[in-house]
Amino acid sequence: MGHNNSPSRSRSSRFIRPFGALAGALVALALAAGPAFACGGLIGPNGAVNLVNTTTLAGYHDGVEHYVTSFEFAGGGGQFGSLVPLPGVPSEVVRGGDWTLQRLVRETDPRGELDSAFRLEAVPAAAQVLLEVRIDALDITVLRGGANEVGQWATDHGFRLPPDAPEVLDFYATRSPIFLAAVFDADAANERGQALGEGTPVHITIPTDNPWVPLRILGLGKSAAERVEADVYLLTDNPPRMLPNPSSAGNGLFLKHYAPASAELLADLRADAGMGWVPESGWLTKVAIDAAAADMTFDLAIDASGRGEPSAVRAGLPPVVDGIARASSNLDWLVAAAVVLGVGVWFSALTLGRRRLAPPNAA
Amino acid sequence: MTPGRLADGLTAAAFVVVFALGMGLIAVDPLATAPVRIDIRIRYSHFDPAAVTVPHGQPVTFVLHNNDPIAHEWMVGDDALHVAHRTGTEPFHASRPTEVSIPALSTVETTVTFDDPVAWRYVCHLPGHEAYGMVGVVNAR
Image (cartoon, rainbow over the protein chains, first blue to last red):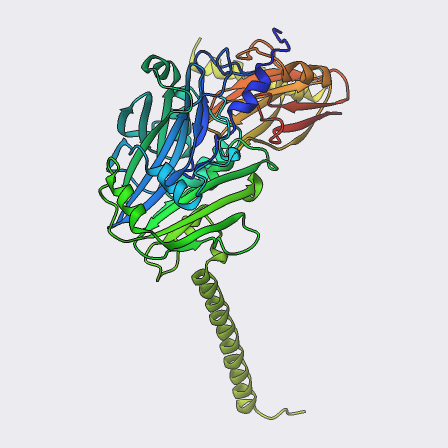
């Protein structure tokens, strides 16, 4: 039968865990360097952690969302990757600035240190390819397709998707069939002399009505009880409204910072490479995520104007949670009740009329 | 042979077969000619149904429909088999009817005869799939 007690099995259970922090909703998935083993682990011979995602900025200005995130090289060899759901087709994917993310952390955490819990290890149909770009040791492909098509593409390209991937991909593809696949070539990183802990920042520009941050995908590959921990930074022109509301208790979202962005911060961000879009004034929000993976069943919908309602659909919430949907539902009940009442009145009137017209009982 | 004589011959043959069947001279066991077929669908990394009942001592064909964009396995057997596969490294299963790999978005058939009336578990042993709930039971009666 060819079975043995290879430790690769336990390695495999590590690599399929998201490397967390996202904010950019980035999930590490293993790419089999060679043929995948069906019965056991498939990660490379060393099974080491190779890719760490740190933190992400979702900025929004002039109808364009700017995702800035970083893939941190943590050693090892082979290839590793991640899938990122996107709210729309990116107009550009380029190398991100050199200090944007670090500067944001320093703004909200004076110690300037990331919580170690956020530095989780990433052990490691025909989808339509919309964009391909190479950034340092990172190969990025933007795909359009349903869950099956994107899943098939990922499988064909060596991604080993965890068992919850089909449902999670469906969750996203039914609302926005755009995904970004990032493949990190650790061998190339080694050849480039990329140091351990050195990140590769990526800046994704997405024209869209409102910014949006995928959160559910942070739980991909995790067991129900495992924690999802991440930081999301938002930089918007106005104080944003969010759904779910991070101020509400029990949803695993915590509002850590909600204030006008300082002029110094904006100036620093604007001075970074590719960050010229940063406006003269803005609002900085930091949302910390700390929830069991089983409870992380939604995304973060945002109304950047601060005057409208964030979309329940974009949040991936059932329509009943949406205020408009609830009002609509109530309206439906009122209409139904009125119809029943109307029919009753009509029937009663008809009966009374017939009784009045009927001849007197002969008996 | 003319068409008329051929038709007469076929009619006569049919009559003999029907007569023999009526007299019990030819025993037809529908299960012997057509194995029991059980459809098991896979969606979102779960088996549906997660429990099936089959007759023991005769072949049962399982039609395994993988509607997921990822590969799965269908391993049926006793605890020892599942313990072995939890730590196995075999890349693909195709040589044993009780151990089947099902590529993404595909359908695979396998025929198994359960000699004894016992309950066997079927499990997908790809990493994390069993813990995710990809298990079921075959009750051989």
